[in-house]
Image 1: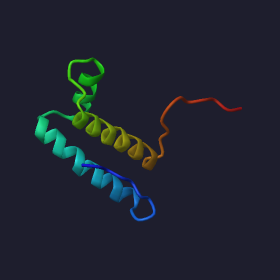
Image 2: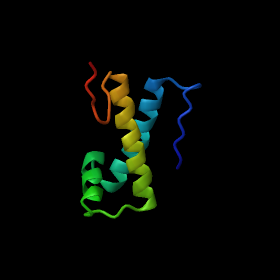
Image 3: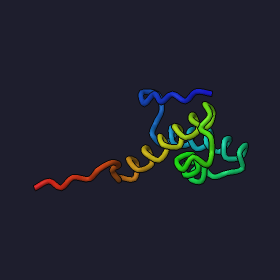
Image 4: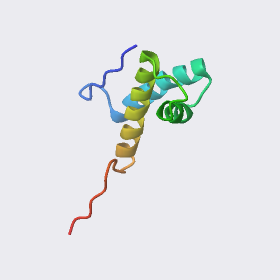
Length: 81
């Protein structure tokens, strides 16, 4: 399965909805929430197979898009004067 985001044809809300559906399939298959799997992969308690990598990439995209939609920023915050 491949996820491609084409913002010219799909609204942000539609993209978020599609990513959530895609991610939910993995969560059901592995019987694990995405946040739990992300932590397990980071701590090397779960193996990052190609399939898990696709899941984690989609999850990261979802978190980024949701934060943008909600007006939050990601990454390092810098103070401007």
